[in-house]
Every structure is written in structure tokens, then in C-alpha cells.
Length: 75
Image 1: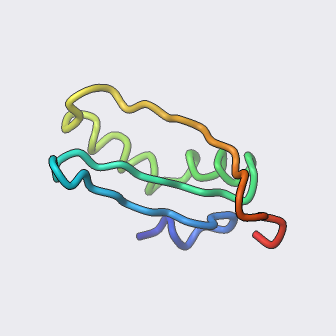
Image 2: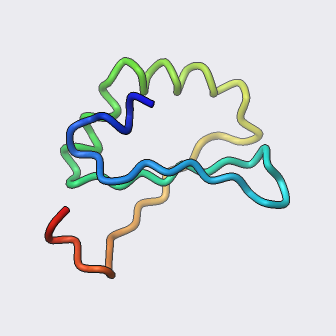
């Protein structure tokens, strides 16, 4: 997966709901906002976004979190 090879990515996890395997969540952790923004500019992200849009049961929604534990100073 090209996203996992990007500079600035810490984790890129794909999670499936145990009760509904068609419900998939992507958990992406970037070193900083610049790395997250750069991801959205890549060709592989844009192709993925356009390809999966018609497959969505509802529009994609991003939820942003901030790390509180463990300490992320070494990321």
C-alpha cells in the first residue's frame, strides 16, 4: 500500500467491523499536519478517493484526534 510508504506516516491501519465486515475504517497517524496534507495531494490517494466514492453507504467523514498516550515525541 503506497500510503504506508509515504514520508511522515506513522501508522496506517485498516479495520473492519466484526459485525459488519463491509464497514471499514481507516486509521491514519501522521507525524504532523503537513504530512497529512501531503497525503491528500498524492496520486494514489486521489485515485482511491475517486474509486471508492460510489461504494460508500454514506459520504466519507474524517474525525481528527490528538494523541494523549503514549508519549509521541519519538514519532
